[in-house]
Image (tube, rainbow, N blue to C red):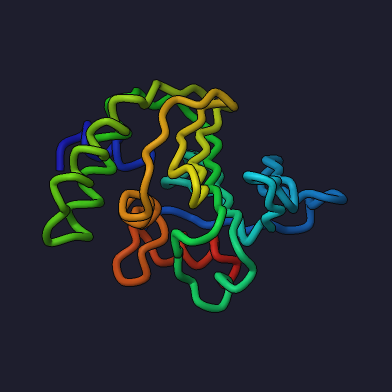
Length: 196
């Protein structure tokens, strides 16, 4: 893999040299904190109150990369499975700058490893989604929000960038982190589901 590929993967992956730090003693009332990055215990998503399932900080060697949190139905803690029939949200706060193009490159690499074939319609939606990415700096937050009646919306610091309708796209894209068979990292997936 090229140096550019490794940097791109830092946006999405927790390859074996990553360290996971779960929510712990720094929690405040109504929120969970990891390494001073805090997430509210519940979010209102499309009129539905959705609980925080899990959160983690990821490091590459000695470098902080991002802190992530997953909101979804409580039963996902046991099943450890994303289902596009419920409101959910993946939040990622970055600890370093990453260029817009690196997000799409990294996601494509993970999706290709996960799926033998991706339907053409989903592949087209993935391409549109990747064109919506913007570069991030330390402190920026991407939110990947799914609402069954709307679809998957990508937010950057509360600004909606794109929405893709349909459960098939949601299942593929949330699968980058949450796939039950081949997530980008099983420790990350388990921590997000709150079961690690």
